[in-house]
Length: 98
Image 1 (cartoon, helix red, strand yellow):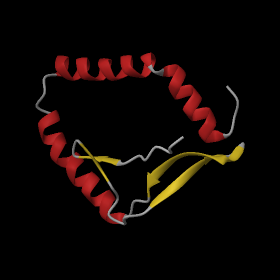
Image 2 (image 1 turned 180 degrees about the vertical axis):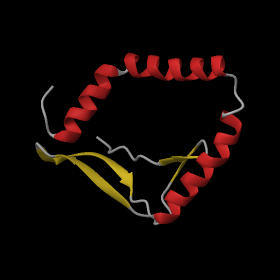
Image 3 (image 1 turned 135 degrees about the vertical axis):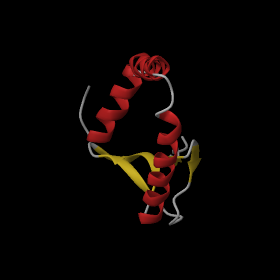
Image 4 (image 1 turned 180 degrees about the horizontal axis):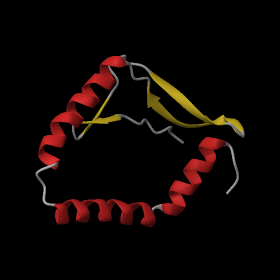
């Protein structure tokens, strides 16, 4: 089974870290199980993310409150729809049982 690679989500895109490095996230209860490869981000990645967030805020703050509520409600719905998978992933990351 291949190990998933996760990227930074900056400015609406998945991007690799500026360091070019990744790190393995392992299940503490089963150290042989690599859960994924994550970006080993550095200060430049943080600067890019903050800059993108500041820029996006300028647009987001002009979105009418009812529309913002729709977006946030949909995000909550997606979390509920995926709660079983999220629970499995989170417990594996912590080395716990569900």
